Length: 302
Image 1 (cartoon, rainbow, N blue to C red):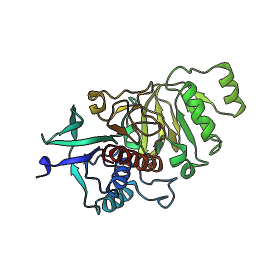
Image 2: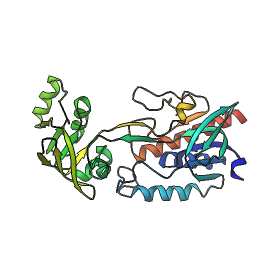
Image 3: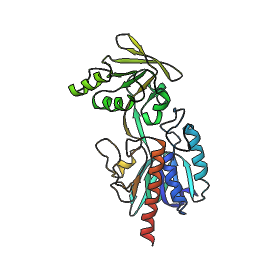
Image 4: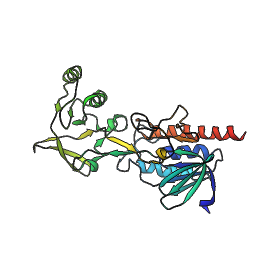
């Protein structure tokens, strides 16, 4: 019975980072359990980019192929469930799922991702990952030269504008309220002919997720083809917190250069540890994490 088995490593989260970590461990003959709910944050994104060998592929196809390859290693098991609780018992960890199953692992890897929090703008979520995007490196090439909005204010707006200005000159900052820029920042925006609109936004008019118009509170509108929007977030799982893992000032799980959290025996990888959100970065951090967890197991055994 699966529940009575003890695992070398339990990986919570089975998207790109979690699968990558599992492959590293499976190839070292480690007994691994992946617990995954099957709800990745990029489920609406039509194509993944900036990842060599997979450029332009759909995120779902990349994940499907990854699962097939990872599960060929007979020491790896993938469980369709949600991990809801974690406790440390002596030197091991007990993880409970939403099905009231309890699994024991020597080490834990959190590849749980983050939860995006959208602004109160009608239809924003319908466009997320399609024409409302977060990353110029992931999506910028495909929307280059288009009429572009940046939904941000202050330093965040400046950072995105500096990146996107190389991709399009038809660029407008939407602060969704009073602007918050220094005189130096305003001078730079004027220099690059980037206007600022301070009106509050109420709705996005779209067609199958593709932006057509932005509607303001005063019932005026502007047409755009794409919008960059850095949204706020929280951790997708509260188990790291339950186990005592510290977060940094931005809300990411604190890890060292070896992907270790502040709790011995626990690692983290993927979107939950840093702002560079991409499939390529998730795969890279998962690969390193798997190797580092295996290294600690080796040090305990050899």
